[in-house]
Amino acid sequence: MQNNNLFQGMYNEIQNAHYVLLVTHKNPDADTLSSGLALSNYFYENKIKHKVFNISSILPRKLDYLSRFDKITKDVPKYYDLVIYLDCANKDRVGLEFNSNIKSISIDHHKSNKNFADINIIDSTTGSTAELVYSFFKENNINISKNVAECLYTGIYDDSLGFTTSRTDLKTFDVIRDLLNSNIDISYIANKLLMRESLSKFRIVPKILNTLELFYEGKLATVYLDDSWLIETGATKDECDDVIDQVLSIGIVKIALYFRVVENNVRVSLRSKGDIDVSNIALLFNGGGHRNSSGVSVSSSNIESVKKELVKTILNYI
Image (cartoon, rainbow, N blue to C red; front, top):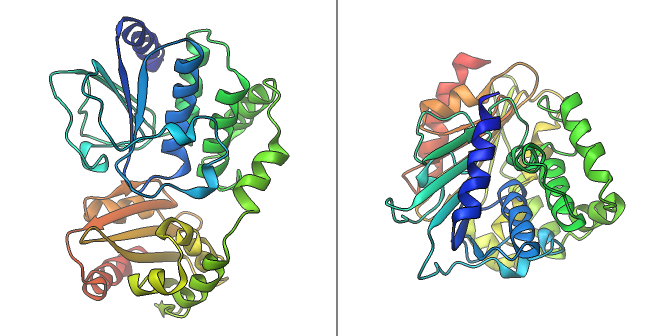
């Protein structure tokens, strides 16, 4: 497998580096942060100087139980000689330009034709970036500590929607079985991920669901977030992200879209059931992702106009 040699090359670059910058994508999810923190814990345990960077001012509160979560910074260190991008299909997902003369590595499970790093470890058949990071440890015969395993398990669990997506296969459960050998407490992780919702989330989600519109005999459903509701309820944007899964759970719905404005761009999450490939729709709008879960960012602050364009386009897919 081509990635085997790349993982070994990555290990060599890490060993030769004086300071490693681990870069996670803006508007971060569990996969990018857990992957970065898995490497961070390994580096910390082996006295490898590094930082985990994320440009966002607010990080997902549900992940604060992960070791070294509090060390994530949006300040770029003055010196670094190796950059490792986690779950960043292209530089646009980072939110900041880094020195292109510095050696770089990209680990990602999204299909991309924009290879922007010196070493690109990409496998679109793998369920999550966390699984690719796991392979880095295994291919280099590196012991996986409890803290590292907890991060990897979290990333895989969250990105697979609790092992329910079509990308979940025997290989995924083989990885999970191996991680359990590190004595992680999956009940503890589940409680931290699923049982700590804020009251503000329960105040804002009904407002979002109240925007529900159905198209094409109910096969397509859309909802959106109004930023004024964040101020009114005290909720954060990341707390609202799983509302799209609630919409997709409606029996007649085949495709669900969730719209919100982020930094003067309309961000759209696309979800689908069965054999409807929303990644093809996302590609038409310079987005990307997976068959049943993709994303788009449109340079506009007008949700209604972006919604009309997407609804019109989706007619050809349902």
